[in-house]
Amino acid sequence: MDSLSGISVFVQVAETRSFTEAGRLLGVSSSAVGKSVARTEQRLGVRLFHRSTRSITLTAEGALFLERCRRILGELEAAEAELSDAAGSPRGRLRISTPQLSELIMPALDGFMLQYPDIELEVDLSDRMVDIIEEGFDAVIRTGEQHDSRLVSRRLGSCGQVLVASPGYLEKYGVPRHPSELVQHACLLHKFPASGKLERWPFQLAASEAEPELPQTFVANTIEVLGFLALRNKGLAFVPTFLVRDALASGALQIVLDDFIDQTVTFWILWPASRYASPKLRVFIDYVSQNLQI
Image 1: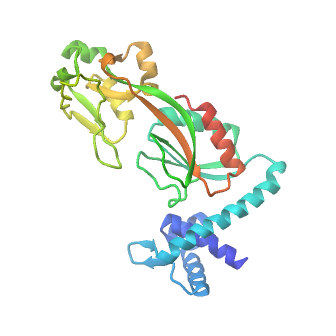
Image 2: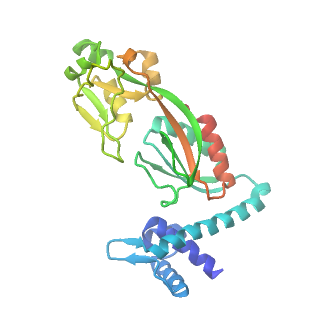
Image 3: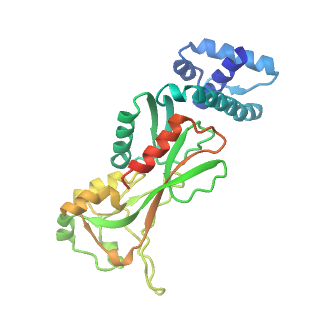
């Protein structure tokens, strides 16, 4: 049992990269965490972490041990879950990562919390490409094609993407009739956090036509702010339809250059293939699949 306790401490330190934070989550002091790691290293005869005054990183042996330890804890969680399934509702902590799209994500999470009050959610709202396995997430929601063989995925849904502007902006600056006219307009652009590249506006042009060089009036690494600024007459934004559904219905935003754009975005939920799908994870996957309003 001491070995199992040491494994739990080791995994928590590996995922938080901090003795202090691991201790806080485990309800013990950072000193107790440090002593537990030291005992585990002594028992194994290897060094699991590189330590400095500024950071803690895994050694090669530590990274290998972490993968095995996660499997051990996953099997233990599975055994406990099988015994407790019949006794009550799913419970425990779920660590998930979702895009910074609170208008899309939060209604689903709010409903999930109401339906499953015994499940504690730790949510990372981020557009960066997280490493699900390395960072210890139970599940993540992301867009685009997924090719990681370590993960299992389920398609949540797709929606179109549109170029929009407010009536006030269009009245002042005119309605563009062709993508080439955008060089005279204010363009609100999205930059991918992982690559730092600007998201291109996928115009369907004739072979002889060149893509317009869009003015970088405003650049952000999250999409929601682009819709916010478009509503306030600041320019044109290329956004998924769910983000501007109500604004389009009320007339607060209008679609422009629709004949030149035909593109969709697909959302997926992903989770580690090697990890036991506990009851809390299964109900989360099912709930999000049914209630995310894409």
